[in-house]
Length: 542
Image (cartoon, rainbow, N blue to C red; front, side, top):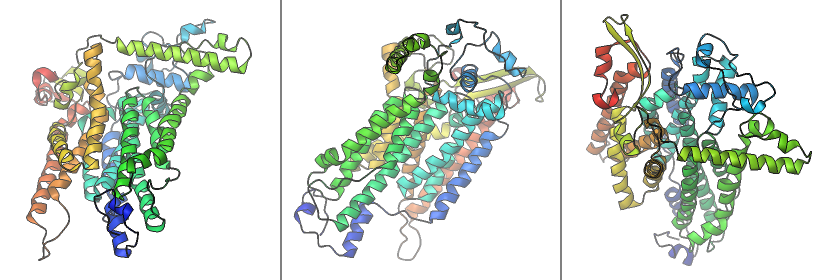
């Protein structure tokens, strides 16, 4: 049977193809992975090792509380100590930097006064707290989890790029760019939440790409060995999709902005299911996706995320001192059902308070920025700055940690995203669509908050966009290089040679750009002149 672009011909013709025809169907629906499986791991792992060394080297520097670390490192320590966030004493940061850990405000019998009002879910702080539990309440301890997660995200991106492009070389290229991005680097060395949000979003995306391949493998296997039907088969338990649901729940358990990705990824995954059924030529692929795939998708993107999200609040439910907990009221009747109902009512009320807080967050800040400016890097965030006299070979010296992306990568990504729009419009390539959708979910929802709430926002809120910027560049690099098809003489086509040179030059420029910025990403002592020379848009970056 010849499978054509028509969704009807494959269904209406008898299924009598030979082995070569069946092979062509499999190759078209699930393109084979090129290259060595071993190098498919060794290459990304080597890139990850490189990125990890960069992130862990002198991780405890600067020996100071950097920017919003003042909130999250103390909340994290409270979680591993008390199970919930507690109010700290005045000048707790000074106590911590002098080696003390007794930072809790005395409350006596009024336990409600100990409860700290926090406006983000607890998972990111639990992750920060894990590093503090292992290494202590010090800069290395509270930054350890961010460095580990940032390093692992390089491996995940390299592997997912390899799966999407079927090229180990392009997978390593993607991992290298992420390792060299300045914003990813700084957030991997700072105890803020956004690196954890990015990690769980990227992990969910990687799970869904793996699920896409696995689902198509199952469809082709059914196609080769079973009688054809109108809708196609049920594909069994989709463990990768369930894992994606857990990852998306964890993203929301770091920051609520993960919700946008949950909705978008659920729709994207179902469209992929319908597209797979259509690629086989099934007569009613979209109805088949609704009948066969939607029920389990509801489990993976509805039930599983809810359960996983609630599990991250276990400390709040299990203790009496969480903000708004009302433990005494919940336990007064001794009825377990009343305990559950009242506890949930208190929790919902707390969530509503958090929602109204975010909606009304309009406090001006020196480094706040509008979302339209993020791709242009117009307003980076000075996470840390200290001017010093002497010690750098000049009279005036500076130590700075600047939260900014590597300009070569960010500006290159703008061109790549425009190219992906054209590519998707002309070809409906699923890879271009997935990257564009994911980038949009990390960016466009913030325009609503900027317009409707005039909310205070910062460049590092763009962190979930960064992996998809890198994927956009990687996909365009694949288009530039072209397929690995030698000419009749055995030589590679000129296009592939030129494309490889352009892509290699871009990677080299990114490396040089990162090297140039590195001193102001790590708090290295520089002369004031050297520091100022690294400010791209002087009036906007200072």
